[in-house]
Each structure stands twice: as structure tokens, then as C-alpha cells.
Length: 150
Length: 192
Image 1 (cartoon, chains in turn yellow, orange):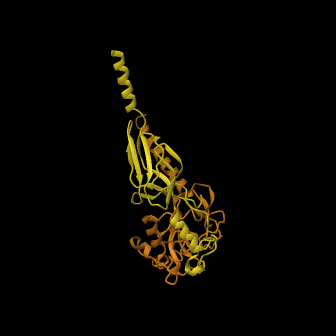
Image 2 (spheres, each protein chain N blue to C red):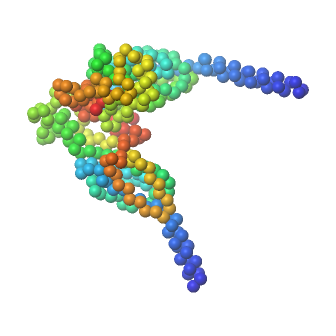
Image 3 (tube, one colour):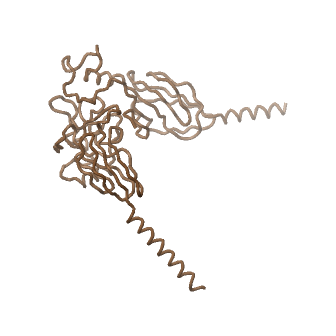
């Protein structure tokens, strides 16, 4: 019986020493998607639509911001409409593309921009954290190369 | 012997100081600045004419799209390339100009020959579109000191520079300002 208690004690301690578990949720806006999310050693593949969450990740203990790329479909759609770059997408300005658009400044390819959470979060062994990405809690991350090239 | 030790130490010190000051004075790097804003390998080619440019205290002058400056000798070091650039205006009318800087703090070392390219990813400005960094106050103030004739607004009012303001005729952002990404308006590091 004494051995059983020791084993259970170690098991409980082991549980506390497990790497922190983190889940990230996209709570920005319906038209905004996130991808390439990372936090303190965790990296999540795939795209997070509004309201969706990552799978739980075992991250390193310590402090970090959530880093990710953001795509705003509504802004993209408006830009393409203004530029008249996509067939079938109704151009702005009374049905014609903006005549003042300069060559070299139109691009129909969606752009994902680098962002991070404004706040840093601290996680420790044995803990579980749910981080919600909101519009008020994010900022551009200029430490990573932009989609405009290196 | 006791007298010799402080004397020799003093001599070594003088030699070291003398040696290092000689190095600082003789160290030189050769630099060219390139207006690479029309680089077709980039996702966007904002039409910035570089009207003024300076790096490590040396002026490189005006550079039209695709143009590279003459090679100039600079003291090695680390610095941003500072610029005044005009949006879609090779004549550099002040109302189309904004203070821009390279995004990277560029470095040259003794004996190096280097061309520094300024393009979409390597610039920052006072009213940038998404994906282009805003210019820090220190660089902005240095540009105002270097080229006061352009009469740019103070850093706190940097987004009120004429080039940052919406185009009255179209309602879009100022031509030099920002719209780099959308193309509906200004430059890539100007405004939005």
C-alpha cells in the first residue's frame, strides 16, 4: 500500500510537470481568417476561420505573444472591386475600375499579413490556457518578413 | 624595474589609442543607393521617386525609379537610409513628398563595397498601408532636420502631410501616401 501511495504521488507530480497546454481561438471577425499560429514552441498548421480553435498544443513554459498571419476577406474583396482585377467581381465607381490605379499596384493574389497579440502571456507546467484573438488585442508584427518580399 | 612598469603601460596605452583612432579615420566603405521600388520581383512596385537620400551622413541625391547613385565613400557603421520621396512625381513637387527611411538598419564595414536597395519591403513611412512599417520618430526627426525646405509636419502630425491625405477628387488616400497594397491611392509607406 505504501508503494501505491508513492506511485500515485509521483503520478500527480508528473501531471503538474507536463508542458503547458494551449488552445488559440479566432474571435476577430467573420471575414477574417488566421493561419500559421505559433506560441512559445507551438505551431499550428492550417487556417482558422472565425470562431474556430486550434487543437491543444503542448508549448514551452515561459512568456510569449501569439504570432500569426491575418487575411481580411472583406478588405481584399473591396480592393479587388476597386481595382477591377477579378472578372465577375463588380467594379466600384459606377461599374468601371478606378482609372487612377497605377501600374504595379494591382495584385489579385490574397495577402496574408504578419500579426501578433498585443499582450504577452505567461504559461507554466501543468497549466491549460485558452487564448482568444480579438480585433482589439492584435497588432502588426514587423519583425517577420512581409508578404511584399524580402 | 619599478619605474619601467608604469612607463611601459603608458606607452602601450598611447599606442592602442593612437592605433584605434588611426583605424577610425582611415576606415572607409564604398556605398551606392538604388531606387529599387520598381523591382518586378516584389508583389508591388510603388512609384516612389527618391528626391533626397542620405546614409551615414553622406548625401546621395535624387534617384528616379530603377536608378543607382554614384558610389560614395562613407565611414563604416550602422544606419538607416533616410529619404524624401515623391509619389508618382519625378519632378519631386513638395506636396507629393513624404519622409521615408529604409526598414532595415543597414551596415557597412571597412573595405566593403555595397549597393543598398530601397524597395517595397525595405522602406517605412509616416502613413503606411498594411504590411509596411511606420517610420520611428528618431528617423522622422532626422529627415526633417536634413531637409527642412519640404516643410513636413511634426511627427505627431505625420499623417497630416499633404501626401498622406485623401485625394479630394477621388476620395482615395493621397497619391504618395499609402495605398500601396490596394493601388487606390498613395504610396507604399506613405499614408493610408
